[in-house]
Amino acid sequence: IGEELKWALHYNQHIFPAATHYIIFQDASESAMFWGTQAGSPFRKGTIFANGATLAFQRLQENLREGYATILLKNTGGAAHAMSRLFEECTEARESKAVKHSASFTQKSSGSGGKYTHLLETVGEEIVSDEPWAKNFGLGDVQAMVRLYERSPGALK
Image 1: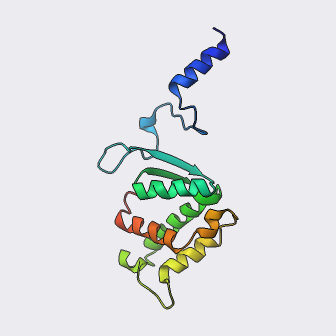
Image 2 (image 1 turned 120 degrees about the vertical axis):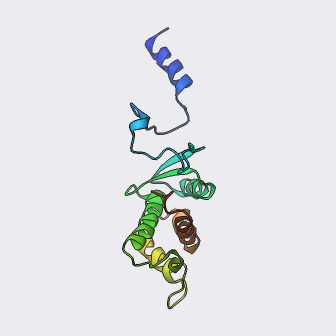
Image 3 (image 1 turned 60 degrees about the vertical axis):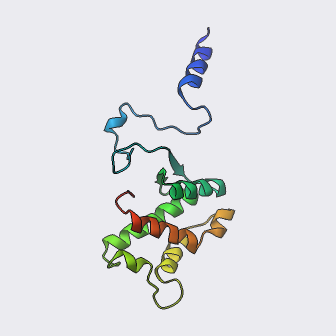
């Protein structure tokens, strides 16, 4: 058997061939990545998002909704960047004491939408995509991220 065939057999046995990217560690136990829940059990599934168009945005929403481990790579553009910035805005609001308590995220300020509208405007300014996900990105997405952050800020890192 030739070297090329040996590699192909090994690759098909040990690596998921439909994946497009891999993160491989010499020793995953020493990595800085978050691999399990706060209770110590491993995640059932996890996904790393970089950039992303409409299909990736739908998968990202599903991951967050289902509680799967989700890594968002900021400054990669697309849906991953938008959701990463939204999370960052939630974190900064909490850390800067601009939000006195978690309920104030949902309080209405003067005008319709209050804090949600402010977050949408802040993040929306950075969305330059003309993909369908970008056109449909709105208050529902902001509300979902804020609710997720309110329910379990310690689980989001």
